[in-house]
Length: 348
Image 1 (cartoon, rainbow, N blue to C red):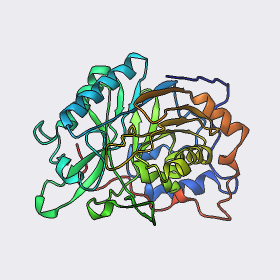
Image 2: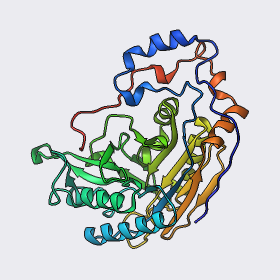
Image 3: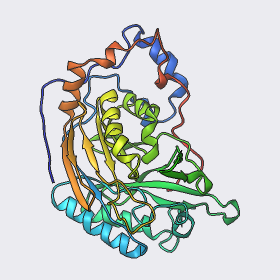
């Protein structure tokens, strides 16, 4: 595992546009302020990352045995924590094979929450992993089933736990993976899955705020922009790009989201298993605010890590001051639009 710590003395500059007064921004955003989580905008001189934090991404190989997958995930989370990680990320669909044929049979009911161990062994396994290792754990994603079988609804859901094992937040994949590249790959998650309906921001006590989204969500920069404007220090994407789009866009997407928003980005993939019907690209990676790749896995199982430092974010934004150079008199501020931070009946 590799890590990097960079320091500098600058703090983050104001995100308010030069052409818009602070009072006008406050008036414009007043209707959107609904909870303490979204009240603190990235418009202060406080660092968005209060102290350095070591982030580890686990590139995991998962098979057909859910119990074995959960046990293996625990081993790797323990390994990452033993090496100093305080924030650990698992890949998309870490508890099962990935594919529309598998979502219903591996789906777990998370509502009403908290679910019982019988309803959701993955929920309880993740909670136990976080508590055992005293880490913040982004639990990749798992297939979630609506509690009413008559709805025939399933979601691709990420569960985020704190060091005490308590659920901090959840994210249901917002953008479903529906693509058709003739002669190469056709995939339609929407044949089975239903989408989530919110931007997911998560407070990590003592450190700051991250955003969590899943795989195909990374292709939609609006989610990342909102997260950055709301004071996140990192964007975390459990994902499972394939061997067609992965070589073209995986690293590029991670670097693009980091560069545009001047923060850290983590993309956590399953390991590649050519015996499975879906071949994940692998290449889990962590990118810094200057779009430098700090750590990258290959195709096999691995744990990659880097130390994230708020001074690197501050220095990047001081040297290339995008926050103070935006022209909201020329184009709209996406952060001032209608944004959903909540949805009905989230996991608890």
